[in-house]
Length: 336
Image (cartoon, rainbow, N blue to C red; front, side, top):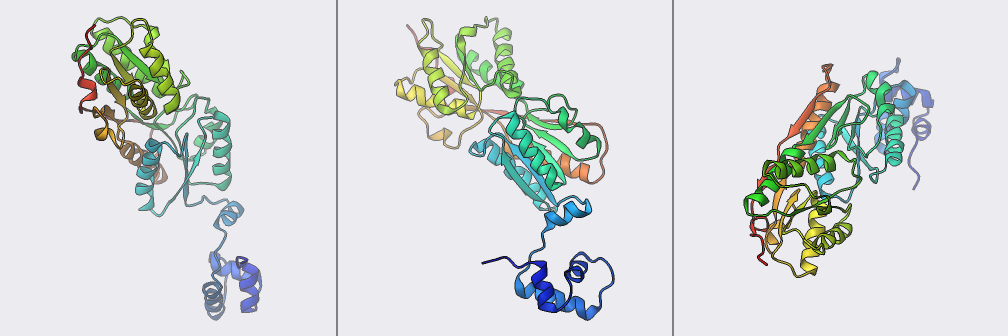
């Protein structure tokens, strides 16, 4: 069934489309009786104004916020989006979400789409790349907030987790339980902010304990299957690790899968990011838990402040992590 148009409303009332537009946009004089008949026809026909077209025409901002995330299927980013939406919905704003597939080109195309729509604010979980192309928009006053990772080449608000500190605490926990060879399974690319920060936290903990950094113990896997293969490569080393630190939730899943496939319950594991079924694993997963809902809510708070006239310097908000001890990170080193 065809959606009713402004022309349909005008024909129903017996006036011009321009008169209908004046009524709907409250622009110019219209007789009270005509206004009543137009609104009655709008309700009867179920006409919905094209707000996007109107905003483009008059140069107004849409009552929507654009959010770019790397992956829609990753539970972490879904919870981040939920935190944003919960905060902005109460202010009458709509959240529009799109996925960059962790690709700079896709990210820029999606941002261009949001900007063409004239969103009220832009929120981005950035892929590895450069964000100088947004300087003009930020200078023009568009609120722009980066989540989980800061922008590259652009000074802008951002909300991140305590990545380095959390990783340091997780690896220190393994060291405290007697482990001296600890494998690291991280995300890619290597230049990704969260990967760099968590690897640095890993190195911090080793250094604080007087342990050497061994590059052979560092592996990469962007998805669970790749992380599982990376875990198996670590376990196959001539001098394999007795413990593993997984750099994000997908790496944790991959490590758990690999250990299960190998029938290994003697390798300690701490994951960065908690998992929904962490307590159901055998042993239950010890994790450095982020608070993705708090990340989203904090980012939304920055956007709302900017929309209400805050013109202060760009801010960086760091959301703390916490170590949840469940069992997998407390396994002692196996004896030869």
